[in-house]
Image 1 (cartoon, rainbow, N blue to C red):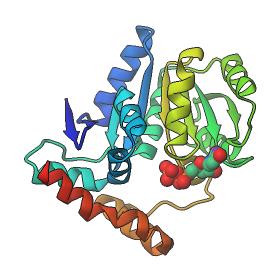
Image 2 (cartoon, rainbow, N blue to C red):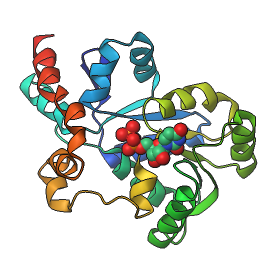
Image 3 (cartoon, rainbow, N blue to C red):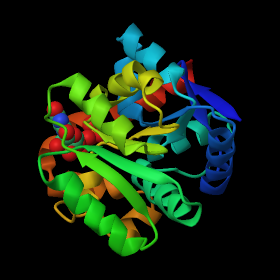
Image 4 (spheres, rainbow, N blue to C red):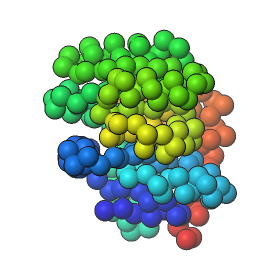
Length: 235
Ligand code: UDP
């Protein structure tokens, strides 16, 4: 159930299938690392072997960018729906609340993870968030000690990409938590500091256009889409 795009596997699972698998693995004591994939990360990995290896090391590479769906359609693949990092996080939080699993939030500017915690507690009254830590603490021992003492089952890491993914592979094996997801700027959105694109833009796959209008300097990140599609078709 994975499709390769320029050397990067992309999982073709629905949110429900992902949740079922993640919780089954958790019950079996297995660890899972979730990374959100978009054309920008795949293109970066073409020139960066370590990053390519890192993206391959994840257990679930979710198709976060609409560019991946377009590439898959053009290549006759099976990917049809995005699984975005933030929606995956929200779905995991809902499932954690339903199944009594504990959550930790690591990353973001000081104060943001606390606000995201409050936002999640309002959305999912049964959620248990056992701790938060901002993304500017430098003492690695303090970070891992704090997380282990909070004994979460799921850790969301919001340090930006690829820092958060490197942090996960380097630390997941000395942490007792089972599920690790890199979530980029999601705490900023959940805390209400940054607005997500309106639902309309999300449904028609134009979230990138909304973000481009809000932050025109993102064009440099987005210009790679046609190059990505060309390369993906040619491979
Ligand atoms: N961040 C952090 N520590 C750092 C650098 C960044 O916690 O040393 C946080 C930052 O506050 C922001 C997130 O990482 O909340 C990066 O968000 P961005 O939208 O840039 O993520 P990306 O687009 O890389 O997924």
